[in-house]
Length: 171
Image (tube, rainbow, N blue to C red; front, side, top):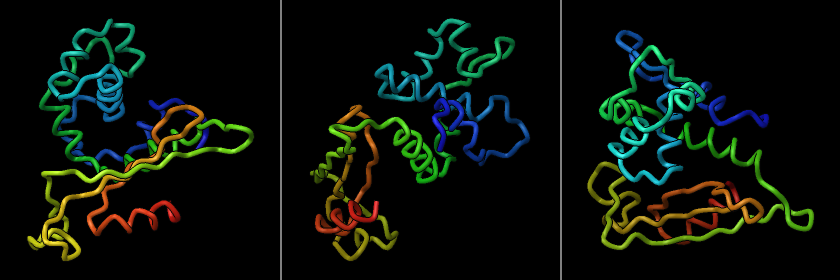
């Protein structure tokens, strides 16, 4: 992937919405969400409120025409919920990896895993918690580029802690 801006990556994301009634381009909604998260917003309502506070020039930079209103909180929510999260994650991860740096000529990636206490997984849909683990707590695995501080990826493992090392080797 080239060193295109993140908004260019958003333009390549397939829009799962029905074309009829779409008032806001997908890349513009994703750009608003990304800017809101980068500004520290923790909820979809906060992202929408942050978008309301942006200057017209900033909105234009994100691909929002001045003659059209902002997407509502519910539009942002429905749009994000309809996306293929794995596809979007793959695209953003690929984009981030074009921005990784090196330390002494080597790209250094730090990997960490955590168990989410109090949470239970049910990824298989049959009530056993996925993989027969009885609804065990999911494990998060994250990778961070040491050169830039950029998060390289994050996975949820439901089949036990040992599974994360396979993800590191294959990821």
